[in-house]
Image 1: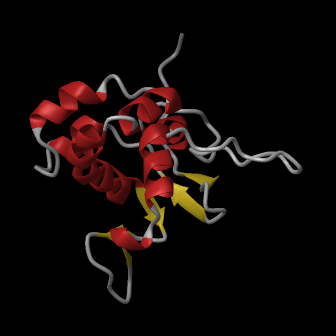
Image 2 (image 1 turned 135 degrees about the vertical axis):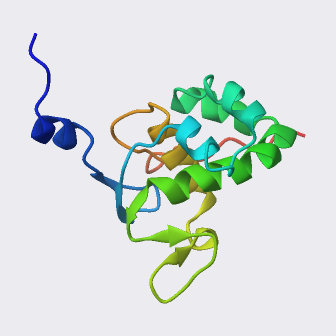
Length: 140
């Protein structure tokens, strides 16, 4: 097996255009949570836990634990900011970039799962009911 050329290497790491659950399109790059942690944006303890979030299903498991979700939102935001190539996204909105709060939570969670090895195609976290199917009543 021959080593990759510089061009092949760059193409393998090129950003990808994706459609987010909201229907908006973005150019995203896959970043590793460790790279973001090294910037000081994510506590090291969360990096260890992040290895369990390799799929959409695992992120959904996290959502079922409200305390965990609150702890993770800062890390999720940091990963999303690093992943966005276009439009640019930062902590605060400016003329040149969106603020992270302008990206829906559903989109942020989908990006986090995608960056951490989730499916190549981003999908909504809450499946939409099929036409003509009534949602089940809430349990009390």
